[in-house]
Length: 591
Image 1 (cartoon, rainbow, N blue to C red):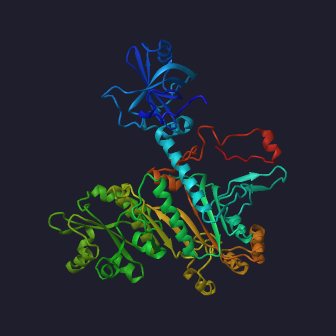
Image 2 (cartoon, one colour):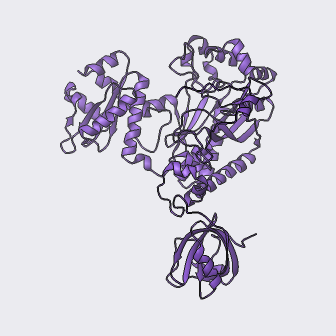
Image 3 (cartoon, rainbow, N blue to C red):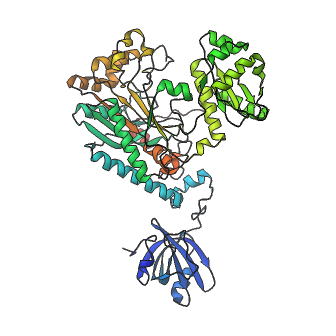
């Protein structure tokens, strides 16, 4: 080894020992005759003293080094002079008096500062990701990611799970997003698809009798990017046989509690995970991924507003459309400009406008255009139901139910951000259960699965598939944390006839179903056990546990917002001979 100790390892117990360290020059300070260098490796930092009075050779070498040079230092561990200790460094009680310094590799001046977590334009960071990863915060994130995955493996191994790899090259099948396709050279005109998830394969492993499977699985989806989305991502893929829904929920809850306690930088808000239905989540929070760290819950005012003289509300209630509102504390003095900002958010979410009321902070009197359409008794009833106080702002929505959910859910999230509720450094988990099997909106005249086509309906609801499919509830469940879906799963269909029935409802012909899923349908005829699973997202969970707003901060080599690798310049063009080998001709769009 080129070093006897790591840079973060030395303590007072090492004083007097001759040691060798190797790492990067983090900072360099020339005091005239004495050069101080903070030497850094993954383990931490140690202050190295290159004193011309002790070793002229070491000082001369130190005089030439600059930040990010890779150096090897041999010297004696010494206590720092009294009063010069650094309590902010684990090695702050000691320093290394250099006797011999070797430059292992010089370095150009980096395009951004490495030793501080200064704000750097993301495109520059991604272009020089190998330098970005030297920074303390990024290294910390990767260490936590490693520890989280190790915890998962140990936890599941102790409970009888087998880790099994599934193919990366598989068949293209509809799973909700566009596939990444891989052309086959030996089968001209045919393509593999990179897996959006190992969904079919893990179900086939249950048919194979594995019973308890998991995998730290790489998944690929060709979809538009956002803060919690990447073209390639990692999930904990799990499947179990002979279980019921609560068996999976209990196991995953135990896993999450243990993992957060052992590796997370952000603490749990509560050790008991709430369980609420999809309908309750939508009614209370306007979304099926509610952020439970704060209130601002949706309240139904249909009975009061429907009896008012405000025509829009009255007509909507008469037509079966609800009136709901949220009460935002302390925002009753919002200006016209601020209200207009909220109105734009409401319109983007589907509203035609934004109705509001505000309680004067001093008098408690109500202001707002729509107040004149309500009696005093109705205004009092509204404030009581919303538990509104002087200085509060009331935001209303009335339309089709899904639009009301979307509008007030968006406003709730925006106000939670403005009021700082979303900045709380805690993790609050909630299970969302009892999803509808199908989306309310049809797709091209067919039913659209709310999860995926392998999700089982509740057994008691199977007869409704023939009479009222939209009334059918499924065995789907999602785990949500701080407003992000961190895991999704379901009890699966394990009977061929029921799977065919679902495929017919979503518009699959017998021929199409046989072509794309024939292998699964046939497998179900050979004694498929009841089974179910879930897939927590590793990237999102680690981002939450490290307090990062973006999953790119917990991935070693992420893609940009445009799904590009700026470091390697990918995707890139390829040579014509490669296209010829694959029998591919390009038909590029006109510029």
